[in-house]
Image (cartoon, rainbow, N blue to C red; front, side):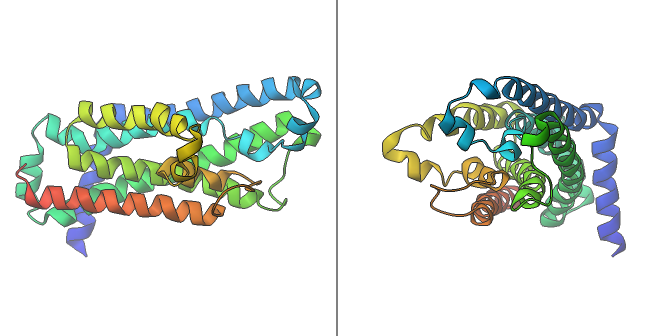
Length: 254
C-alpha cells in the first residue's frame, strides 16, 4: 500500500513540477470553453435564417460541445508531455531503476494523469454546457431533458478517454514528435475526412473519436450503435493502446 502511494506521489510530483503540463490542462479548459461559446453565439444569432430542416435537426447540447474537438487536441499534447518527457530527458532510466516493476511504473503515471484530466474534463464539460445553453436561451437544453445529463457527463468521459488513448500510443512510440505527428493529423484531419467518404463512412464511425464522440449527442439516429456503445468502442481502442504501451515498456530497453 505504501509503495503504491509512493509511486502515485512521485508521478504527481513529476507532473506538477513541469509547468508546461499544468498550463496545458488550463489551456484545454480555456480553448474548449471559448470555442464553444463563440460557436454558440454565432449559431444563435443566425438561427432565424436557418432552413426548416436545419432548425429541426438543431441539437443545442451537442452544438455546445463543438469546442471539445479543439480541446481534445490540447489534451493530446498533455498526454504526450506526460509520457514522453522522461524519454526526451533520458530520466526514464533512473525512474525504472527506482521502480523496477515497469507495469506499476506505467500504471501510476497513467492513473495520476487520468485523474487530473478527468477533473479538468468534467469541469470543462459542465462549464461549457452552462455557458452555451445560457446563450441559446429558450432554445437551449437543461440537464433534466432526456439524454442531456448523459451527454454532459459523456463529454467529460470522452475527453478523458481520448487523453488516456494518447498516453497509450505515446508509451508505444516514446517520441513526442512522432506521437504528435501521428495523433494530431489523425484527430484533426484523417478521422473527419474518412467520415465523409461514402464507401467507408459506416466503418469510419467505429474510429475512436467518432464512436466516442457520439455520447455528446442527444439525437443519435442514423448511427449503427448508441451513445454508450460508442463510448465502449472508445474504451476498447484505449485499452488496446494502453496494453500495447505496457508491452512496449516491458520488452524494450529504456
